[in-house]
Figure 1: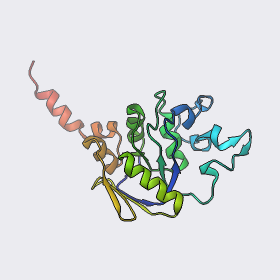
Figure 2: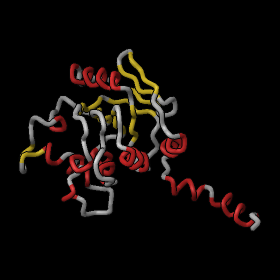
Figure 3: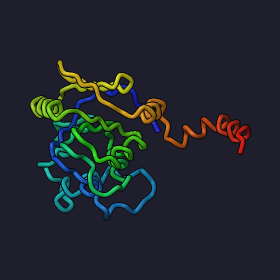
Figure 4: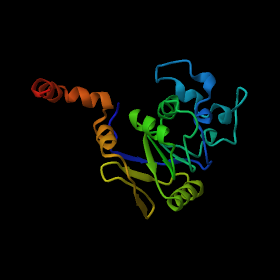
Length: 193
C-alpha cells in the first residue's frame, strides 16, 4: 500500500447524499478478488447510458479532475463490499471528503489506502461550492496534521490513531503484526499460565 501524508490536488464534486456501495460499484462487476480493474466501472450506471458516456455525470466532465472526491452526506452506505473502496482507489482517488461515512466503508477505505475525511456539513458545502465555482480550486490535505484546507478555510478532522499510523507508513494491519512478530514471540515465550 502506498504511503499517504500530504495530498495537494483539485477535487471532483459529487454532491449526492446517501451514495451506496452498489452505486459506487454495481454488484454485477464483483467477479474478481484482485483489486485492479474496478476503477473502469466506478459509478458505472451513472457514468454510462448503455455503452455511451453520460455527458452530465461529473466523472465525464473534463473541467473536473484531481484525486480528491468531494461527496455528499452518508457516503458508502449499503452493503459492506470492499470492492467500493477498491474501485475508488483504482480510479485514482486518494481521498474522499464527506460529512458522514458508513462505518464499514470508512474502515474498508483506510484498509485499502484511501483516506476518508469527515468534515462538518457547513465545511463540505463551502468546499463543494468552491469546486463547482472554480474547478481548479486547490485542496491541501495533511494526514500528519489532520487538516484539510482550501482558499482561506481549513478544517481539523479526526482519524483513528492506529489507522493514521498505517496510512502514513503505507501498511495494512497485517503488516503491523508482521513488524511486531519478535515482540509477540517474546511475549508468548515469557507468558505464564
